[in-house]
Image 1 (cartoon, rainbow, N blue to C red):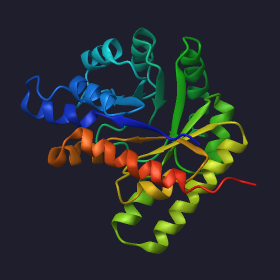
Image 2 (cartoon, rainbow, N blue to C red; image 1 turned 90 degrees about the vertical axis):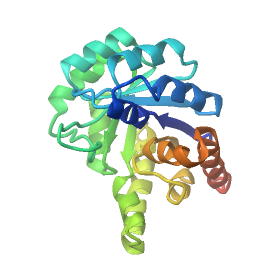
Image 3 (cartoon, rainbow, N blue to C red; image 1 turned 135 degrees about the vertical axis):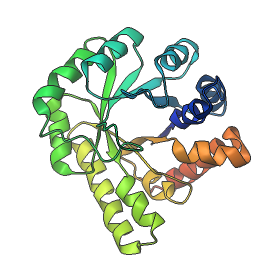
Length: 251
């Protein structure tokens, strides 16, 4: 029943890079999140290094006591970096240079022949692999065939519907996530979720017993500007835990 919280620190680096200096330091944010009770830290090393840089990953790997989850594209360069850095986990995501943030999940059916050996190469060096996918049954079945033990369900469509105030679309997208999480668990995969989650949308996802981890970044970093990272993270944890305790055990 435990629900873990992974904190994505990418956009601390976005602010740092806007000025070109060393501040604010993503490592400092990660350590603050660790001290505030985060269960893990997520950082996306993009091909164009628009926010997180190689040196950030090295510093995080050296100083964190909680797991580091390296978000990455399935490219030879990123595989070599992951094998060298040995993060606790790697989350494979689609990546397009023109996008502002990760848009949508991996198409596992289309890229199966590329992803299967890629996942195996990370597994061989004891890196737990998750695949960032849409809450779609075929993609979940493909994830199992690819050989990854974890799927992270993209909650973007659900969050966008909530932001637009479209109750019908929100309900539809929420049910997609719920069914996907159930199916993933039934076929032996661990289900995570993330993308766009806020105080207003986390409850409905956190109360799904099949989901074991949420990865949240942009909202927490934005909220930290006003209240600080520790209070922002603590409030998110409070809401997650409240939703989780409302789950009625199966009889």
